[in-house]
Length: 132
Picture 1: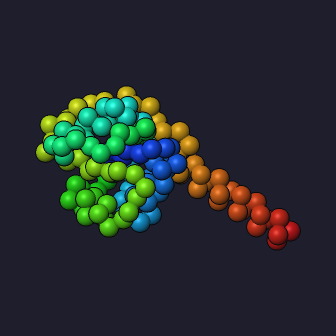
Picture 2: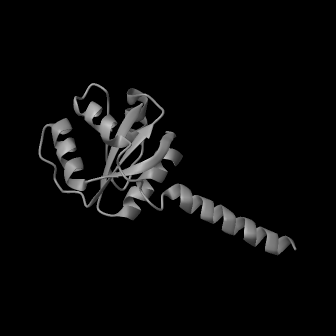
Picture 3: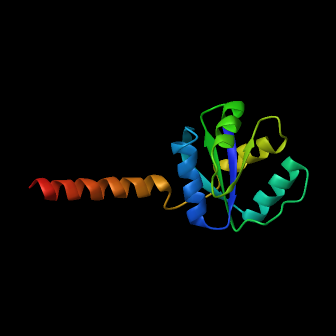
């Protein structure tokens, strides 16, 4: 299990980043994305990069993906998401901390998956109206 911490300025940017992870990076998200305190996320990122971050996040999300760390990093590098993403491997001491709190974090509401389902349902309704 690999974790990815996503920091952004707004929820739509988080949602777009999640969609990019699945569509363009080809990674498979385990379960639902979780909301993590933006200040905590900023601290974790500073710990990982060992430098000050340029801007503070207003919203942050933590996800777990099926793919291994190396593959996840390579795939994330190929895309240009609208949010800052950090792939967290087991080698970091904070990985254990995040793993412990992951299930206690609230779910990110209105995820892109729900939006896709709504679009599919609308499309099916339109198609059934056209064919009848």
